[in-house]
Length: 145
Image (cartoon, rainbow, N blue to C red):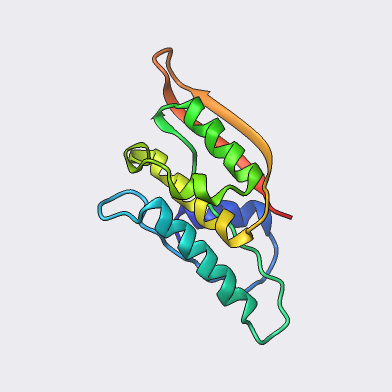
C-alpha cells in the first residue's frame, strides 16, 4: 500500500492487527468523481458498514491534504467550516475547478465526512508555505466522534 494508507496506519494503529479494507478513489486524473459523487459514495459506505452482521468497530480514515501548490486559505477555511457544520450541500456544490492537482485530495475528506454524517472536530489546520509566492501545502487533521 502507498503512503496514503501506510502513514495514517503507522500513527493510528502502530501495533494493531486489524482487518483493513483500503479504498482507492481517483482524486487526481480525469475522470475524477464530482464532489457530489464523493458525498454519495461516503453515504453509501456508511450504509454498507451499518449492514454488517458481525459486531465490529469500524474506523473510516480519509487521507490527503487540503490546498496544494498554491495554498488557498479561503478555500481551506470554507471547507473546514462545512466539515464542522456537517454541511453536505456545501461539499457537494464545491467547484470542480478548485479540486485540481494536489487540492483534489479534498475529495477523500468529503467521503469521510459523508460516511460520518456528523459535525467534525477540526483539531489542526496548518498552511505550510514553502515560498513567499504562496507555494506549499495546507494540512489538517479532523475527527468525527
